[in-house]
Structures are given as structure tokens and as C-alpha cells.
Image (cartoon, rainbow, N blue to C red):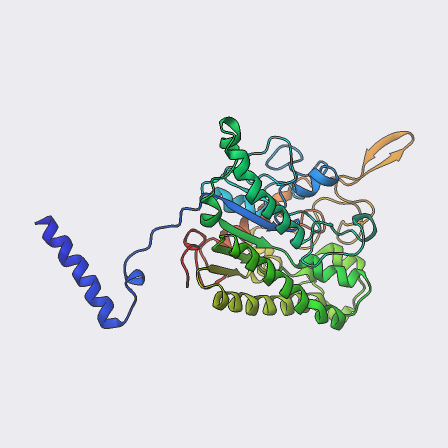
Length: 387
């Protein structure tokens, strides 16, 4: 009897699908995706230790709210990528460049703070931007893909620390990069029109990297757009704007307009990639809207400070480019901490003038995980399905 009822149930669903011209996979319930690994590319918004491994650890009080000390992140605790890993039942991603205590069996993080999509033609010390641009991150991934399988064949502990070959085609590939490409132009004294003029080149290079990863078996992509850079203290403090260019929430409109211009182009790029990459599932995630909503309605969500940095030194926004979070000065032969953290970082949106607090990152993650800010509106755990 149970068997007969099951047959009737299946036939009924097929009949409904046929009559309504609905594909059967949309009628039957989909199972959540089982991503065995994450491979992440980006800048400081998702860097879990890359820049720290290459150029020196992000100093305390970074990490104070969750890790109890520096953990490679420019934040008091976890980043959005950490919450993504948690939600998928995976450990936090180790930075590809970190040689100490790394375990890549569940993926790897190629992001480094201060990274751009386009390679920079000046050094980190000269321009403040990482030499590990997105194309370099792909070179690292390409090398990792090949060498990890060679190492796995050694067996023993080597096998346990490296991803399986099939992980590369079943993994979720996450991206959060582009913000620094925009600010690099402004810091080079470019006008808004000049910055906008090179955005298509940035997007072309981004598109090429996605195609490269697809050619190596990557199929599932989760791509964040860039946030409202005009609401970040390090932008508003360093780049002059007219009073008339400050919006009702204290953000610099010209820089946010450029960010939205970039995001419009990125969305079109993603749409083209969907056409070009037949087997790819690509989710575009609008973190800009969520971040701006958080900043403009911070108190509604329990944040008492939307623009002022929790950790820093002086000025309107508690930000000083020469004395950042964790900075110390010598007074009477003794080192004195001047870049101290606030006592209640969970009530601040901004951590250090550049990056968000763990509390803000958690809010952002909770906003995107169900697909509410995605195109198509795909929950994170269903991002393996092509739309």
C-alpha cells in the first residue's frame, strides 16, 4: 500500500509539472548543497591571515572579541567569510600564505588585505595596496590546485591536510574584492570621472579570473559587490568633499556613487558570465544595500555608532592614518598605546576606520544567508543550483 501511495504521489507531481510547464526539479524539493570546501578570493573584507603572513601580523587589539588576540584579521573578531564557513559546517579558512598550523582539507583563502583586482604598479609601502592582486591570487590557486594533489599522494598527515581532487569541482568559490580598485584611483588624485573610466577594465579582469577558475572545474560562485566606501572614515578623512556632498547619514555621496557604478557593471558582468559558462551557478550578492542600511539605521539594529571607529586615535571619526588601531608612541622612553579599542565594540559598525566590527559582519551575514540580497534570490546553502 505504501508503495502504491508513493507511486501516486510521484505521478501527481509529474502531472502538475507537465500541466504548469514547470521543470520537475523546481516542483520537487531541493536538497541543501553540500559544499566540502570553500576557496575564497578578495581583500581585507575576507582576509583571514594572508597579509599578516606576508607582511607582519595584524597587531592587537585585533581579534579581541572572539579569538582573544591577533588572528590575521583586521577586525575585533570574525569576518563574513568566517560566518559563511560556520554555516556550511566547515572550519575557518586558513590563509594560503600562512605556513603555520594550516589545514587546507576544507579549502583555502587567497585573499589579502589591501588587494585590488588590477595589479598595482607601486609597492605596498609606496601606495598602501597589496602586490597580491586578484591575478596573483589566481596564480596561487592554480599552483595550489596542482601541488596539493601531489602532496596528498604522500599519504599520512599530508593526505589529511589537503583537499581531495573532487573538492575543486564541488567547492563554493567566494569573492569580495573591488573596493580598493576604486580608492586607489582617488588616492592617486584621480577625479571621479577618471576612476569610473577604468572600472570596465577592472571588471574585464575580474571576468577573466572567473573564467580561468571555471576552466579548472569551479562551478559554484558566490560574488559580493562592493560596499558604500563613502561611509568609511579612512575615505572621508583623507579625501576632501564639499559639505553639499555629504548625505543625510554622514556619508560622502560621490564615492558611494562610484561604488554603485562599479556594482552595476559587476552585475552585468555576472549576467554575461552566466551566459558564457554553461554549467556554472553564479550568485550576485548585494552587500552594498545591506551595509548602507546598517549604517543609515544603525540604532534600529542596536549599533550606537555608525561612522566613528571603535579602534583608533583622534579626529572626528577616531581615525588617524598615521596612528591606526593598535598604534603605539614613545613617551619618555616608554611605549604607550594610543590606538586603543572602545570598551563596547559590539555597538559599533566600524572597527578601525576601514573595516567592520564582528557584530556588523554578523549582521551582514545574517542578511545575506537566506538570499534576500542576492540575484537570483538564492540562499547560501542552495548556491549549487543553476538559475
